[in-house]
Length: 459
Ligand code: PHE
Image 1 (cartoon, rainbow, N blue to C red):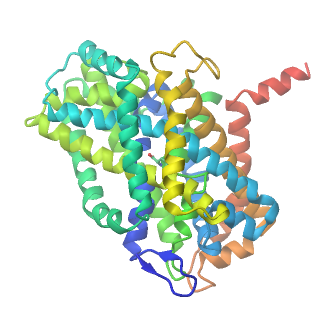
Image 2: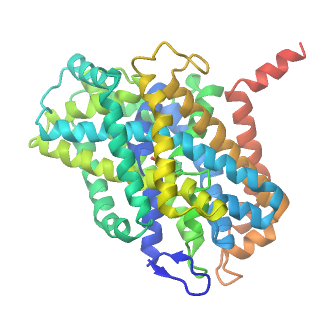
Image 3: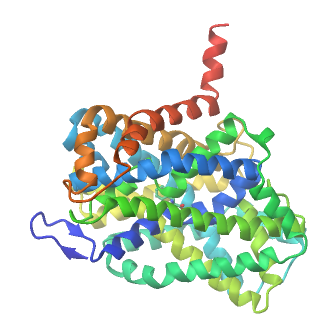
Protein backbone atom coordinates (compact mmCIF):
# COMPACT_ATOMS: atom_id res chain seq x y z
CA UNK A 1 0.00 0.00 0.00
CA UNK A 2 1.34 3.41 -0.89
CA UNK A 3 0.47 6.81 0.48
CA UNK A 4 -1.52 9.08 -1.70
CA UNK A 5 0.18 12.42 -1.36
CA UNK A 6 -2.81 14.59 -2.09
CA UNK A 7 -4.89 13.53 0.86
CA UNK A 8 -2.40 11.33 2.72
CA UNK A 9 -4.94 8.56 2.77
CA UNK A 10 -3.65 5.05 2.34
CA UNK A 11 -4.54 3.43 -0.95
CA UNK A 12 -4.30 -0.10 -2.24
CA UNK A 13 -0.95 -1.05 -3.68
CA UNK A 14 -2.60 -2.63 -6.67
CA UNK A 15 -5.97 -3.37 -8.14
CA UNK A 16 -5.62 -7.01 -7.18
CA UNK A 17 -4.76 -5.84 -3.67
CA UNK A 18 -8.14 -4.22 -3.31
CA UNK A 19 -10.08 -7.12 -4.78
CA UNK A 20 -8.25 -9.51 -2.49
CA UNK A 21 -8.91 -7.39 0.56
CA UNK A 22 -12.59 -6.91 -0.23
CA UNK A 23 -12.98 -10.57 -1.16
CA UNK A 24 -11.05 -11.37 2.00
CA UNK A 25 -13.63 -9.48 4.02
CA UNK A 26 -16.49 -11.21 2.26
CA UNK A 27 -15.11 -14.76 2.26
CA UNK A 28 -14.91 -16.08 5.76
CA UNK A 29 -16.79 -18.06 8.35
CA UNK A 30 -19.99 -16.76 6.77
CA UNK A 31 -19.40 -18.92 3.72
CA UNK A 32 -17.64 -21.90 5.19
CA UNK A 33 -19.24 -22.27 8.59
CA UNK A 34 -22.54 -20.40 8.43
CA UNK A 35 -23.88 -21.05 4.93
CA UNK A 36 -23.99 -24.87 5.19
CA UNK A 37 -25.73 -24.92 8.56
CA UNK A 38 -28.15 -22.13 7.65
CA UNK A 39 -29.08 -24.06 4.51
CA UNK A 40 -29.42 -27.17 6.66
CA UNK A 41 -31.70 -25.46 9.16
CA UNK A 42 -33.84 -23.65 6.60
CA UNK A 43 -34.93 -26.38 4.23
CA UNK A 44 -31.87 -26.77 1.99
CA UNK A 45 -32.77 -26.01 -1.63
CA UNK A 46 -35.48 -23.52 -0.70
CA UNK A 47 -32.95 -21.49 1.24
CA UNK A 48 -30.35 -21.65 -1.53
CA UNK A 49 -32.91 -20.51 -4.09
CA UNK A 50 -33.93 -17.53 -1.96
CA UNK A 51 -30.29 -16.75 -1.34
CA UNK A 52 -29.73 -16.46 -5.09
CA UNK A 53 -32.84 -14.36 -5.64
CA UNK A 54 -31.73 -11.93 -2.93
CA UNK A 55 -28.16 -11.95 -4.19
CA UNK A 56 -29.34 -10.75 -7.59
CA UNK A 57 -31.77 -8.12 -6.42
CA UNK A 58 -29.99 -6.83 -3.32
CA UNK A 59 -26.46 -8.26 -3.15
CA UNK A 60 -24.84 -6.90 -6.30
CA UNK A 61 -26.78 -3.65 -5.98
CA UNK A 62 -25.60 -2.92 -2.48
CA UNK A 63 -22.03 -4.01 -3.08
CA UNK A 64 -21.78 -1.34 -5.74
CA UNK A 65 -23.60 1.18 -3.57
CA UNK A 66 -21.19 0.78 -0.66
CA UNK A 67 -18.09 0.97 -2.84
CA UNK A 68 -19.48 4.09 -4.53
CA UNK A 69 -20.10 5.93 -1.26
CA UNK A 70 -16.75 4.85 0.14
CA UNK A 71 -14.70 5.90 -2.81
CA UNK A 72 -16.59 9.14 -3.34
CA UNK A 73 -16.09 10.33 0.24
CA UNK A 74 -12.78 8.56 0.94
CA UNK A 75 -14.07 8.16 4.49
CA UNK A 76 -15.25 5.41 6.82
CA UNK A 77 -19.06 5.00 7.16
CA UNK A 78 -19.87 7.60 9.80
CA UNK A 79 -17.62 10.20 8.23
CA UNK A 80 -18.97 9.33 4.79
CA UNK A 81 -22.60 9.92 5.73
CA UNK A 82 -21.63 13.02 7.65
CA UNK A 83 -19.81 14.48 4.68
CA UNK A 84 -22.72 13.90 2.32
CA UNK A 85 -25.61 14.73 4.70
CA UNK A 86 -24.88 15.49 8.33
CA UNK A 87 -28.23 14.21 9.59
CA UNK A 88 -27.50 10.72 8.29
CA UNK A 89 -24.40 10.09 10.36
CA UNK A 90 -26.35 7.83 12.74
CA UNK A 91 -26.84 5.29 9.96
CA UNK A 92 -23.06 4.90 9.88
CA UNK A 93 -23.22 4.52 13.66
CA UNK A 94 -25.70 1.69 13.26
CA UNK A 95 -23.09 -0.06 11.14
CA UNK A 96 -20.43 0.35 13.79
CA UNK A 97 -22.83 -1.20 16.30
CA UNK A 98 -23.45 -4.12 13.94
CA UNK A 99 -19.69 -4.55 13.59
CA UNK A 100 -19.32 -4.77 17.37
CA UNK A 101 -22.03 -7.38 17.70
CA UNK A 102 -20.91 -9.52 14.78
CA UNK A 103 -17.28 -9.57 15.77
CA UNK A 104 -18.21 -10.54 19.34
CA UNK A 105 -19.59 -13.92 18.29
CA UNK A 106 -17.47 -14.22 15.13
CA UNK A 107 -14.41 -14.29 17.34
CA UNK A 108 -15.92 -17.08 19.44
CA UNK A 109 -16.27 -19.23 16.31
CA UNK A 110 -12.81 -18.14 15.16
CA UNK A 111 -11.65 -19.57 18.47
CA UNK A 112 -13.30 -22.91 17.68
CA UNK A 113 -11.29 -23.00 14.44
CA UNK A 114 -8.07 -22.49 16.39
CA UNK A 115 -9.12 -25.26 18.75
CA UNK A 116 -9.59 -27.60 15.78
CA UNK A 117 -6.16 -26.69 14.45
CA UNK A 118 -4.72 -27.76 17.76
CA UNK A 119 -6.78 -30.94 17.58
CA UNK A 120 -5.48 -31.69 14.12
CA UNK A 121 -1.91 -31.23 15.27
CA UNK A 122 -2.46 -33.67 18.09
CA UNK A 123 -3.84 -36.13 15.54
CA UNK A 124 -7.45 -36.64 16.51
CA UNK A 125 -9.08 -36.67 13.08
CA UNK A 126 -9.73 -40.38 12.73
CA UNK A 127 -13.23 -40.68 14.16
CA UNK A 128 -16.30 -41.11 11.95
CA UNK A 129 -18.90 -41.95 14.55
CA UNK A 130 -21.39 -39.05 14.55
CA UNK A 131 -22.21 -39.53 18.22
CA UNK A 132 -18.59 -39.33 19.25
CA UNK A 133 -17.77 -36.34 17.01
CA UNK A 134 -20.87 -34.51 18.17
CA UNK A 135 -19.98 -35.29 21.76
CA UNK A 136 -16.46 -33.96 21.38
CA UNK A 137 -17.70 -30.71 19.87
CA UNK A 138 -20.42 -30.20 22.46
CA UNK A 139 -18.06 -30.98 25.30
CA UNK A 140 -15.72 -28.35 24.03
CA UNK A 141 -18.17 -25.49 23.41
CA UNK A 142 -20.07 -26.10 26.64
CA UNK A 143 -16.90 -25.95 28.70
CA UNK A 144 -17.03 -22.63 30.59
CA UNK A 145 -13.40 -21.57 30.14
CA UNK A 146 -11.73 -23.37 27.22
CA UNK A 147 -13.62 -21.67 24.37
CA UNK A 148 -12.97 -18.31 26.01
CA UNK A 149 -9.24 -18.85 25.89
CA UNK A 150 -9.41 -19.56 22.15
CA UNK A 151 -11.80 -16.62 21.69
CA UNK A 152 -9.14 -14.42 23.31
CA UNK A 153 -6.42 -15.80 21.03
CA UNK A 154 -8.51 -15.08 17.96
CA UNK A 155 -9.20 -11.54 19.11
CA UNK A 156 -5.53 -10.88 19.83
CA UNK A 157 -4.61 -12.06 16.33
CA UNK A 158 -7.28 -9.80 14.83
CA UNK A 159 -6.26 -6.69 16.71
CA UNK A 160 -2.59 -7.39 16.11
CA UNK A 161 -3.17 -7.24 12.37
CA UNK A 162 -5.38 -4.16 12.59
CA UNK A 163 -2.71 -2.29 14.58
CA UNK A 164 -0.26 -2.92 11.75
CA UNK A 165 -2.60 -1.23 9.26
CA UNK A 166 -4.94 -3.16 7.02
CA UNK A 167 -2.81 -3.89 4.05
CA UNK A 168 0.92 -4.50 4.54
CA UNK A 169 1.42 -8.20 5.12
CA UNK A 170 -2.15 -9.40 4.74
CA UNK A 171 -2.31 -8.31 1.14
CA UNK A 172 0.80 -10.33 0.39
CA UNK A 173 -0.41 -13.50 2.13
CA UNK A 174 -3.88 -13.25 0.60
CA UNK A 175 -2.46 -13.75 -2.84
CA UNK A 176 -1.30 -17.24 -1.88
CA UNK A 177 -3.65 -18.32 0.85
CA UNK A 178 -7.01 -17.40 -0.67
CA UNK A 179 -6.43 -19.44 -3.84
CA UNK A 180 -5.10 -22.29 -1.69
CA UNK A 181 -8.29 -22.27 0.33
CA UNK A 182 -10.26 -22.42 -2.88
CA UNK A 183 -8.37 -25.46 -4.16
CA UNK A 184 -8.58 -27.17 -0.79
CA UNK A 185 -12.33 -26.67 -0.55
CA UNK A 186 -12.79 -28.17 -4.00
CA UNK A 187 -10.79 -31.26 -3.01
CA UNK A 188 -12.84 -31.71 0.14
CA UNK A 189 -16.02 -31.22 -1.86
CA UNK A 190 -15.00 -34.04 -4.20
CA UNK A 191 -14.28 -36.39 -1.34
CA UNK A 192 -17.60 -35.54 0.21
CA UNK A 193 -19.49 -35.98 -3.07
CA UNK A 194 -18.04 -39.45 -3.58
CA UNK A 195 -19.12 -40.77 -0.16
CA UNK A 196 -21.93 -43.35 -0.15
CA UNK A 197 -25.37 -41.73 -0.27
CA UNK A 198 -23.86 -38.29 -0.93
CA UNK A 199 -26.45 -37.67 -3.62
CA UNK A 200 -29.10 -37.22 -0.91
CA UNK A 201 -27.19 -34.22 0.35
CA UNK A 202 -26.86 -32.77 -3.13
CA UNK A 203 -30.59 -33.16 -3.67
CA UNK A 204 -31.32 -31.61 -0.30
CA UNK A 205 -29.21 -28.59 -1.14
CA UNK A 206 -30.12 -28.02 -4.77
CA UNK A 207 -33.71 -29.19 -5.19
CA UNK A 208 -35.99 -26.60 -3.61
CA UNK A 209 -38.98 -27.78 -1.64
CA UNK A 210 -41.26 -24.78 -2.01
CA UNK A 211 -43.40 -25.77 0.95
CA UNK A 212 -40.39 -24.92 3.15
CA UNK A 213 -40.47 -21.23 2.16
CA UNK A 214 -41.91 -18.91 4.78
CA UNK A 215 -41.20 -15.47 6.20
CA UNK A 216 -38.54 -16.64 8.57
CA UNK A 217 -36.64 -18.69 5.95
CA UNK A 218 -36.78 -15.62 3.72
CA UNK A 219 -35.37 -13.39 6.45
CA UNK A 220 -32.61 -15.90 7.20
CA UNK A 221 -31.60 -15.90 3.53
CA UNK A 222 -31.64 -12.11 3.47
CA UNK A 223 -29.49 -11.91 6.59
CA UNK A 224 -27.13 -14.50 5.16
CA UNK A 225 -26.59 -12.50 1.95
CA UNK A 226 -25.71 -9.41 3.99
CA UNK A 227 -23.52 -11.33 6.38
CA UNK A 228 -21.69 -13.27 3.73
CA UNK A 229 -21.02 -10.29 1.47
CA UNK A 230 -20.06 -8.03 4.42
CA UNK A 231 -22.85 -5.62 3.49
CA UNK A 232 -25.07 -3.31 5.49
CA UNK A 233 -22.58 -2.09 8.07
CA UNK A 234 -20.12 -0.11 6.00
CA UNK A 235 -17.25 -2.59 5.73
CA UNK A 236 -17.34 -2.15 1.98
CA UNK A 237 -17.70 1.63 2.40
CA UNK A 238 -14.48 1.55 4.38
CA UNK A 239 -12.69 -0.62 1.83
CA UNK A 240 -14.06 1.50 -1.02
CA UNK A 241 -12.61 4.54 0.68
CA UNK A 242 -9.13 3.20 0.06
CA UNK A 243 -9.88 2.76 -3.63
CA UNK A 244 -8.21 4.99 -6.23
CA UNK A 245 -10.33 7.22 -8.43
CA UNK A 246 -9.44 5.39 -11.62
CA UNK A 247 -10.32 1.87 -10.44
CA UNK A 248 -13.30 0.08 -11.92
CA UNK A 249 -16.05 -0.30 -9.33
CA UNK A 250 -18.37 -2.04 -11.76
CA UNK A 251 -16.11 -5.06 -12.23
CA UNK A 252 -15.37 -5.37 -8.52
CA UNK A 253 -19.05 -5.27 -7.59
CA UNK A 254 -19.67 -8.27 -9.79
CA UNK A 255 -16.51 -10.25 -9.05
CA UNK A 256 -16.62 -10.11 -5.26
CA UNK A 257 -20.18 -11.40 -4.83
CA UNK A 258 -19.62 -14.13 -7.44
CA UNK A 259 -16.46 -15.38 -5.78
CA UNK A 260 -18.12 -15.24 -2.37
CA UNK A 261 -21.13 -17.20 -3.54
CA UNK A 262 -18.97 -19.79 -5.30
CA UNK A 263 -17.16 -20.48 -2.04
CA UNK A 264 -20.40 -20.74 -0.08
CA UNK A 265 -21.79 -23.25 -2.56
CA UNK A 266 -18.61 -25.30 -2.49
CA UNK A 267 -18.71 -25.31 1.29
CA UNK A 268 -22.33 -26.41 1.18
CA UNK A 269 -21.43 -29.23 -1.20
CA UNK A 270 -18.55 -30.24 1.05
CA UNK A 271 -20.63 -30.34 4.23
CA UNK A 272 -24.18 -31.39 3.32
CA UNK A 273 -23.47 -34.55 1.30
CA UNK A 274 -21.28 -35.74 4.18
CA UNK A 275 -24.07 -34.91 6.62
CA UNK A 276 -26.39 -37.29 4.76
CA UNK A 277 -23.74 -39.89 4.15
CA UNK A 278 -22.81 -40.17 7.84
CA UNK A 279 -26.33 -39.70 9.12
CA UNK A 280 -25.83 -36.40 10.93
CA UNK A 281 -28.73 -34.00 11.39
CA UNK A 282 -28.75 -31.28 8.68
CA UNK A 283 -30.53 -28.95 11.09
CA UNK A 284 -27.74 -29.47 13.63
CA UNK A 285 -26.87 -25.77 13.82
CA UNK A 286 -23.57 -23.97 14.41
CA UNK A 287 -21.62 -27.15 15.10
CA UNK A 288 -22.32 -28.72 11.70
CA UNK A 289 -18.97 -27.90 10.05
CA UNK A 290 -16.97 -28.93 13.09
CA UNK A 291 -18.79 -32.21 13.50
CA UNK A 292 -19.07 -33.21 9.84
CA UNK A 293 -15.75 -32.37 8.26
CA UNK A 294 -13.60 -34.30 10.70
CA UNK A 295 -15.59 -37.35 9.62
CA UNK A 296 -14.78 -36.54 5.99
CA UNK A 297 -11.09 -36.13 6.80
CA UNK A 298 -11.12 -39.52 8.48
CA UNK A 299 -12.21 -40.96 5.09
CA UNK A 300 -9.39 -39.29 3.15
CA UNK A 301 -5.87 -40.51 2.58
CA UNK A 302 -3.58 -38.22 4.61
CA UNK A 303 -6.76 -36.99 6.26
CA UNK A 304 -5.14 -35.47 9.31
CA UNK A 305 -2.82 -33.37 7.17
CA UNK A 306 -5.77 -32.27 5.07
CA UNK A 307 -7.69 -31.44 8.19
CA UNK A 308 -4.86 -29.40 9.59
CA UNK A 309 -4.33 -27.47 6.36
CA UNK A 310 -8.04 -26.89 5.98
CA UNK A 311 -8.52 -25.38 9.41
CA UNK A 312 -5.40 -23.23 9.02
CA UNK A 313 -6.79 -21.82 5.79
CA UNK A 314 -10.21 -21.30 7.37
CA UNK A 315 -8.51 -19.42 10.18
CA UNK A 316 -6.83 -17.19 7.64
CA UNK A 317 -10.14 -16.56 5.84
CA UNK A 318 -11.79 -15.78 9.18
CA UNK A 319 -9.05 -13.31 10.07
CA UNK A 320 -9.32 -11.42 6.78
CA UNK A 321 -13.00 -10.97 7.66
CA UNK A 322 -12.60 -10.18 11.33
CA UNK A 323 -10.04 -7.48 10.60
CA UNK A 324 -12.59 -5.76 8.37
CA UNK A 325 -15.12 -5.87 11.19
CA UNK A 326 -12.68 -4.42 13.70
CA UNK A 327 -11.40 -1.95 11.12
CA UNK A 328 -14.86 -0.38 10.78
CA UNK A 329 -15.00 0.22 14.54
CA UNK A 330 -11.38 1.37 14.76
CA UNK A 331 -11.51 3.75 11.82
CA UNK A 332 -14.63 5.27 13.35
CA UNK A 333 -12.85 6.16 16.60
CA UNK A 334 -9.72 7.22 14.73
CA UNK A 335 -11.56 9.44 12.23
CA UNK A 336 -14.26 10.81 14.53
CA UNK A 337 -12.78 10.82 18.00
CA UNK A 338 -9.15 11.26 16.95
CA UNK A 339 -8.07 8.16 18.87
CA UNK A 340 -4.73 6.74 18.06
CA UNK A 341 -4.89 3.56 16.02
CA UNK A 342 -3.14 1.38 18.53
CA UNK A 343 -5.20 2.46 21.55
CA UNK A 344 -8.37 2.09 19.52
CA UNK A 345 -7.51 -1.41 18.32
CA UNK A 346 -6.58 -2.69 21.76
CA UNK A 347 -9.40 -0.92 23.60
CA UNK A 348 -12.12 -1.94 21.17
CA UNK A 349 -10.70 -5.45 20.84
CA UNK A 350 -10.96 -5.84 24.60
CA UNK A 351 -14.53 -4.53 24.74
CA UNK A 352 -15.61 -6.81 21.91
CA UNK A 353 -13.89 -9.78 23.54
CA UNK A 354 -15.89 -9.13 26.72
CA UNK A 355 -19.09 -8.76 24.71
CA UNK A 356 -18.44 -12.17 23.18
CA UNK A 357 -18.25 -13.95 26.53
CA UNK A 358 -22.03 -14.20 27.06
CA UNK A 359 -22.44 -15.62 23.55
CA UNK A 360 -19.92 -18.31 24.28
CA UNK A 361 -21.37 -19.11 27.70
CA UNK A 362 -24.85 -19.11 26.17
CA UNK A 363 -23.97 -22.38 24.48
CA UNK A 364 -23.14 -24.08 27.75
CA UNK A 365 -23.37 -22.73 31.28
CA UNK A 366 -25.97 -20.12 30.32
CA UNK A 367 -27.88 -22.15 27.79
CA UNK A 368 -31.06 -21.77 29.83
CA UNK A 369 -31.09 -18.04 29.04
CA UNK A 370 -33.23 -17.30 26.00
CA UNK A 371 -33.35 -13.77 24.64
CA UNK A 372 -35.19 -13.48 21.33
CA UNK A 373 -37.83 -15.88 19.97
CA UNK A 374 -36.53 -18.64 22.22
CA UNK A 375 -32.96 -18.30 20.91
CA UNK A 376 -29.90 -18.63 23.13
CA UNK A 377 -27.58 -15.64 23.61
CA UNK A 378 -25.28 -16.59 20.73
CA UNK A 379 -28.12 -16.98 18.23
CA UNK A 380 -29.87 -13.86 19.54
CA UNK A 381 -26.85 -11.65 18.98
CA UNK A 382 -26.44 -13.16 15.52
CA UNK A 383 -30.14 -12.57 14.80
CA UNK A 384 -30.07 -8.92 15.86
CA UNK A 385 -26.90 -8.18 13.95
CA UNK A 386 -27.40 -10.23 10.78
CA UNK A 387 -31.15 -10.23 10.35
CA UNK A 388 -32.00 -6.82 11.80
CA UNK A 389 -29.10 -4.34 11.78
CA UNK A 390 -27.46 -5.34 8.48
CA UNK A 391 -30.67 -5.33 6.41
CA UNK A 392 -31.71 -2.08 8.07
CA UNK A 393 -28.35 -0.50 7.25
CA UNK A 394 -28.66 -1.72 3.66
CA UNK A 395 -32.17 -0.41 3.26
CA UNK A 396 -31.22 2.98 4.63
CA UNK A 397 -28.24 3.17 2.29
CA UNK A 398 -30.55 2.53 -0.69
CA UNK A 399 -32.93 5.24 0.49
CA UNK A 400 -30.03 7.56 1.06
CA UNK A 401 -28.56 7.13 -2.40
CA UNK A 402 -31.85 6.95 -4.28
CA UNK A 403 -33.72 9.74 -2.54
CA UNK A 404 -31.31 11.95 -0.63
CA UNK A 405 -27.85 12.07 -2.13
CA UNK A 406 -29.23 11.43 -5.62
CA UNK A 407 -28.67 8.85 -8.33
CA UNK A 408 -26.85 11.30 -10.61
CA UNK A 409 -24.06 11.73 -8.10
CA UNK A 410 -23.83 7.96 -7.74
CA UNK A 411 -23.80 7.42 -11.53
CA UNK A 412 -20.91 9.84 -11.84
CA UNK A 413 -18.91 7.95 -9.25
CA UNK A 414 -19.69 4.52 -10.72
CA UNK A 415 -18.55 5.51 -14.20
CA UNK A 416 -15.50 7.48 -13.05
CA UNK A 417 -17.10 10.74 -14.29
CA UNK A 418 -18.39 9.22 -17.48
CA UNK A 419 -15.15 7.51 -18.45
CA UNK A 420 -16.47 3.96 -17.99
CA UNK A 421 -19.41 2.41 -19.78
CA UNK A 422 -22.05 0.83 -17.58
CA UNK A 423 -24.95 -0.40 -19.73
CA UNK A 424 -26.98 -1.49 -16.71
CA UNK A 425 -26.65 1.85 -14.94
CA UNK A 426 -30.35 2.70 -14.99
CA UNK A 427 -31.31 -0.80 -13.94
CA UNK A 428 -29.01 -0.44 -10.97
CA UNK A 429 -30.54 2.96 -10.19
CA UNK A 430 -34.02 1.48 -10.32
CA UNK A 431 -32.99 -1.34 -8.01
CA UNK A 432 -31.42 1.07 -5.54
CA UNK A 433 -34.26 3.55 -5.54
CA UNK A 434 -37.29 1.25 -5.54
CA UNK A 435 -36.82 -2.49 -5.69
CA UNK A 436 -34.10 -3.21 -3.14
CA UNK A 437 -35.40 -1.02 -0.28
CA UNK A 438 -38.97 -2.28 -0.74
CA UNK A 439 -37.84 -5.89 -0.98
CA UNK A 440 -35.73 -5.60 2.17
CA UNK A 441 -38.58 -3.90 4.00
CA UNK A 442 -41.13 -6.57 3.09
CA UNK A 443 -38.85 -9.48 3.94
CA UNK A 444 -37.92 -7.76 7.18
CA UNK A 445 -41.43 -7.06 8.50
CA UNK A 446 -42.64 -10.50 7.41
CA UNK A 447 -39.71 -12.43 8.78
CA UNK A 448 -39.53 -10.68 12.13
CA UNK A 449 -43.27 -11.02 12.63
CA UNK A 450 -43.73 -7.25 12.79
CA UNK A 451 -46.24 -7.41 9.96
CA UNK A 452 -48.35 -10.01 11.73
CA UNK A 453 -48.15 -8.03 14.93
CA UNK A 454 -49.45 -4.87 13.23
CA UNK A 455 -52.23 -6.83 11.51
CA UNK A 456 -53.29 -8.23 14.87
CA UNK A 457 -53.41 -4.73 16.34
CA UNK A 458 -56.18 -3.85 13.93
CA UNK A 459 -58.19 -6.99 14.47
N1 PHE B 1 -18.54 -11.63 5.36
C1 PHE B 1 -17.83 -12.17 6.47
C2 PHE B 1 -17.92 -13.69 6.39
O1 PHE B 1 -18.56 -14.21 5.52
C3 PHE B 1 -18.33 -11.64 7.79
C4 PHE B 1 -18.50 -10.17 7.81
C5 PHE B 1 -19.75 -9.61 7.97
C6 PHE B 1 -17.42 -9.32 7.65
C7 PHE B 1 -19.94 -8.23 7.96
C8 PHE B 1 -17.57 -7.95 7.65
C9 PHE B 1 -18.83 -7.41 7.79
O2 PHE B 1 -17.38 -14.39 7.17
